[in-house]
Image 1: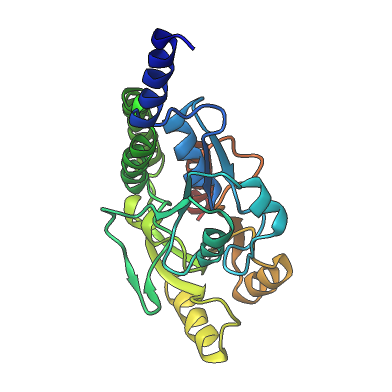
Image 2: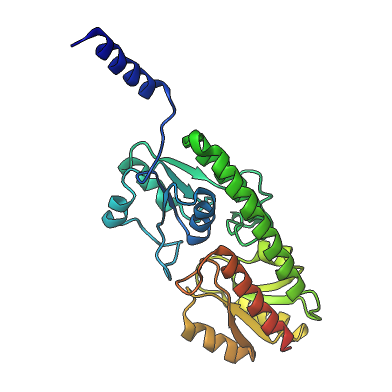
Length: 284
């Protein structure tokens, strides 16, 4: 082999070793829930395949990874999780997907404390979504520095979209005369804080059946504050919710924290929830 050809081959080999990896169609990212996956998609654009692990309608508190899901995320460079007991099941992927970084996306977020620890539902806040987007941009740029400028540009566009959606949501709820709400599950504290709502009571503070004493206090709270609406979410048994609403003389409204096929992205999901609150409290 001629010397020049050997030197050219050696130079190419050395350049491949020393340059940062360039990800293409095989750059794969997984997120435990749809809202985080959607934020990641807005940052990466077309440079990565972003997968959502939790199926629509599934309960994240009792979900378990299946062999099919493990196979789908094989080769993933990054697995994004909420943490704080919400989606710890994803940690099992660490042994099955070698090389993947499993990262919590809450860095820099002011977490709300509960009796059971920190409230993990921090994505239900446009303010926190902006922090998550910045965290993901940093993480993804570390993995794929050759596209860092593109990710930064995508971030700026998305931050503006989040800001506009936040303003629109606050405008929708600005003229409410009633700001007190009752929810079935204790997952709406960040949402309530962002939009000036006060959660008076929660039917199910932790997963499990509410005690008789808890239901008595709930009934007293509803009666004393003339509450007329109960906010549930898709994972709640409709028959249980209907029975409770009948006993307390409340109307049922459904909020969706995780998204379903009818929500094209995170922003639409959040605005849909805001519209539900506007309708419920506007009727009282």
